[in-house]
Length: 206
Image 1 (cartoon, rainbow, N blue to C red):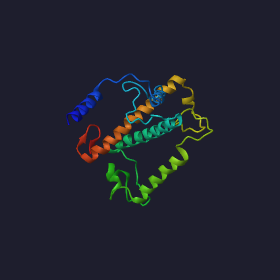
Image 2 (image 1 turned 120 degrees about the vertical axis):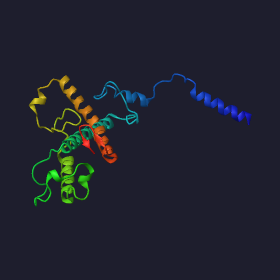
Image 3 (image 1 turned 90 degrees about the vertical axis):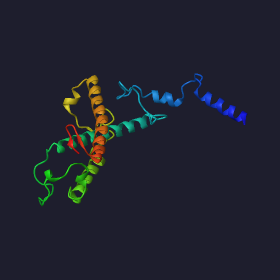
Image 4 (image 1 turned 60 degrees about the vertical axis):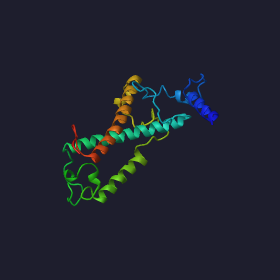
């Protein structure tokens, strides 16, 4: 019994002892390959707490970056839309052809999806339009000389962007990426606070 206790205590002590210096693993080497990518900056630097880039290939990284940019853009629109409608700014006119539901009569937040909010036909139209954009518009089309992941111009040239130098382009892409990250947290926070109730600065009553 004493030997068993001693063995357990020895093992526990060994767990907290400093380990010998070992060579970096393949996983760490592959993760370090992404430390110079766009979005790695102070104060967090390279931050991958879930290890999603462990053993990731360049193609996997590109896919994750593509999803992050797209989600960030959707979140920015969602956050801005939430703030604007809660401030009382709405489109003029009616939501449907019959004129029975006006835009300013649609409640804010989750209530818009419940009874008395947007009609089911309107909700289906919104989902259908988003699906159309997802599958036919907002995607990288091969062979159109897009400059980077998330460049959805697909052959359409925009002079204002093309006139920027590479450093300015990189800076503006960084702005978009970080604003998208902030917006994802922002809209999630608004959704949670709406369920909790109360009031928020700028947003007002939830």
